[in-house]
Image 1 (spheres, rainbow, N blue to C red):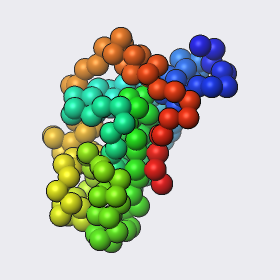
Image 2: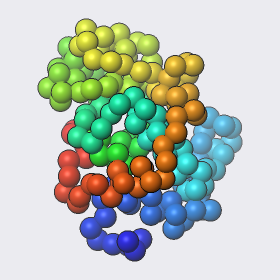
Image 3: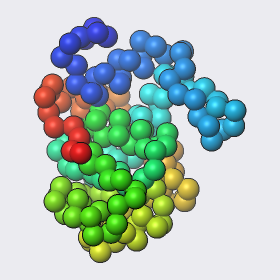
Image 4: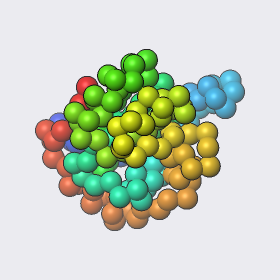
Length: 171
């Protein structure tokens, strides 16, 4: 599929953009000091590893996940990884009180909540839905992404399995 195709899915868009712009800076990472550039090629590898992590957790096309965190590089990686797998993201503002956050979790039919901190996990623990920290601990999604594997064949099959117009995000 050409890079500028009008009917790309979000998964195709990120994969094709990263291939097209591979050596250009996609992000400036403030956490590495002095806003270290991350190339599109590096970004794609990170998206791919987060997709492998989500896949390893048993999530499948059409499942819904909450991303309940402050903005971060890992937040965007989680979202793009979900788009590649056909998983629907349902972001939750980290400033919401527990009752509103739990309502969103229940109303969306969420399978996994990705939380940016232990304090945010506490806000949704009564929902009974599985939670995982986004980063910062040995069992976080970011750490799982370092070891989880997904083949090119499986990832591309998932990306190509989406159609333009499929549900991507509920806000």
